[in-house]
Amino acid sequence: MNVLGIETSCDETGVAVYATDAGLRAHALYSQVALHAEYGGVVPELASRDHVRKLLPLIRQTLGEAGLRVEDLDGVAYTAGPGLVGALLVGAGVARALAWALQVPAIGVHHMEGHLLAPLLEDPALRPPFVALLVSGGHTQLVAVEAIGRYRLLGETLDDAAGEAFDKTAKLMGLPYPGGPQLAALAEQGRPGAFRFARPMTDRPGLDFSFSGLKTQVLLAWQGSDQGEQTRADIARAFEEAVVETLAIKCERALEATGHDTLIVAGGVGANRRLRAALEAMTARRGARVRFPRPAFCTDNGAMIAFAGALRLAAGLHDDAAVRVHARWDM
Ligand code: KG4
Ligand code: ZN
Image (cartoon, rainbow, N blue to C red; front, side):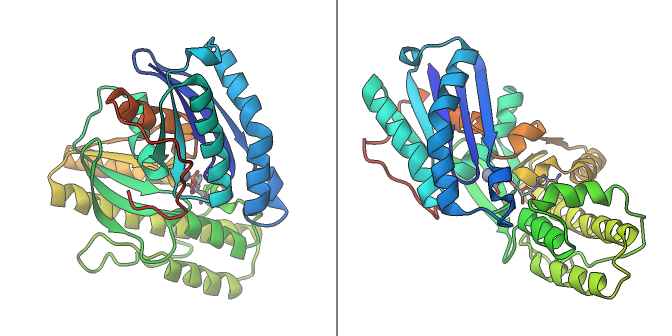
């Protein structure tokens, strides 16, 4: 079964073809980052319009790279939420129209389930049960994955998501949008121990997170400093260490609480090098293991949607013909 996957929940247009027998056949991504940079954040209306411009050419390109004609598709999967409604509607509308024209089934996929299953794209031998850490710009969650489709929320952020905390902290120290990856790059030049920030909510039991107080600590440290280049790098490093250590502590607790010995990490912050190293060290110490998708499949992409959709379509599931999307949607 050749399944086309379409991701348009935010500011990336992602397209891929996943074959249930041959795996990922092709994938392509167009990022709108440059479009939104001058506004300091994603402008929903501009995002929708750009998805309209880019989606069909990207589908053509992906089919070409896969060596397929559109008639070779056996199903279509699209992100149905959560995300920006206008942006979601572009992907859902195109997916539905294509499926109708081709007379093949289509299915709406939960964006976070896509992230959650992305590590399986790389490693087909990897199977639940495992603990998943989802760390993106919009979400920070620990989920027990007992089986595909059986998810139990263990903990989540009470305020900012981890990626959001990276982005906002970068912004308050004057780094251009999108700040998260730039802050992480700057942190590499930071000196250890020059600053230290709290590890929020690690001093009490539980698996929830809170990152907004950390941002305030950074603001105070930054305002009280010489605001020089080295200081900015030093603060970036201390901030990154605080987030990473907090995430690692909670991941260890989640492994402990569930008894699972596999941790998977998904979402944009999963591209962070210090986080990868900390989770490798923590799991190695416990005799457990951690798996990350490649950085391109940590951030938003069409491959994870094609894959999650293919699992359901292959099991005979699909949605009716209505174009339905959800700005907010529980997994
Ligand atoms: O999953 P994603 O591409 O989009 C959604 O939010 O769904 O995640 C984007 C987030 C942004 O907040 C970005 O700053 C963060 O992931 N991010 C990083 C790194 N790369 C991306 N944060 C820390 N270190 C990185 N290397
Ligand atoms: Zn995402």
